[in-house]
Image 1 (cartoon, helix red, strand yellow):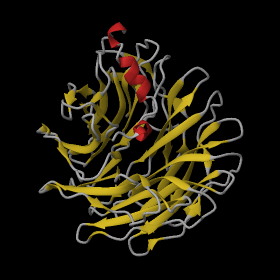
Image 2 (cartoon, one colour; image 1 turned 90 degrees about the vertical axis):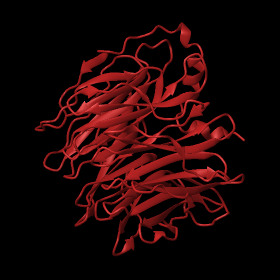
Image 3 (spheres, one colour; image 1 turned 180 degrees about the horizontal axis):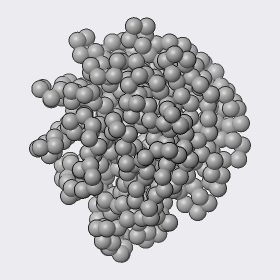
Image 4 (spheres, helix red, strand yellow; image 1 turned 90 degrees about the horizontal axis):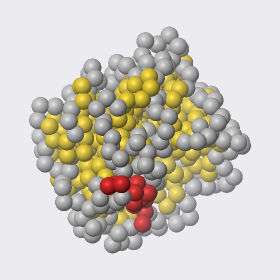
Length: 463
């Protein structure tokens, strides 16, 4: 049975697919050399700058990206079918220095529709992508692996085929090419959290349900992070019949998954939208948004291998309005950067706070001051030295544009700037990836509406 919640993946997708049915009426656009205006330098005193935004695919949506240690990348996206509803999964590789490979199909051809893909890569450029797709009956979870010298292998299903529709897959990789995928899956009554592990020697294992056997309510929105030894931590939100709480479970290669543990205890209101990051030594930081009965705030909890989970802490104190959509990333020393959007009574702005192992959380700081329109859904990545890049979309009074800001330990936050490079289009949420040297890549899609010639998947690089 199909589930109406499929629209949670990409809010604009139903409109995109409807208009694609009339794609024959839309003027074709040549992609080669189709770039936008040049970006401007980011952080003052930094040698890195955003380049030119360029389009790498038309008729596409929900792109995602991963980079290896040399800055080579893979972008994956949902390719919309011309003249019919539905989508397929495609990709392009990027060689550091500026050369894009030809578009390649990632998934099967005989599908009705794919969901938004998740992708991760190891330092050598081996990548794993996971996605859900349907043949018109139900959504199943699939994966494929890309090796630099071999290309894409054969797609395979990785979930339990006796359960129901799969939703919201996520994947993370360690430096040795091991990967863990997590997702939510409907059992006919409620959603549960599942996981599967990939190793280069054995491939995918068996899917396991990893959340507490709590039948009071469903579990949703899983996220996962791995350390350098292949230990994984997954987080998700789960209802107790009254409200959603934040839960976590930890995987070690020797023992498998442990017991699920609730990592927040505040029952004033529901806790949702968790996200997690880990450093190479296995320290991790989880963030989420939680209602206090009046407004949503941003909370965090820290995990240390020798101590376990600590006490949940609120990382922002501004009570003008809701704080939403938190994300977090960590560097090699265990420092963390959290970002979110927050209402100030007039509009939503992008905020950040930084955690250091020696001193804990600092003071939250607004990292953009463009008040023409609301800013939302930030994403953050951090390199091993603590340089961070944040991307988000922001309305300029006429349309949504893609913005970014950069943090360096020596200079702090730079000046926020638009990086999309084109004057027209309705931009979707950006995704980011970063290499060890601080080079980064942002990807997003421009919706196919109003006969917009900019439609498709766009990329900009910080180098």
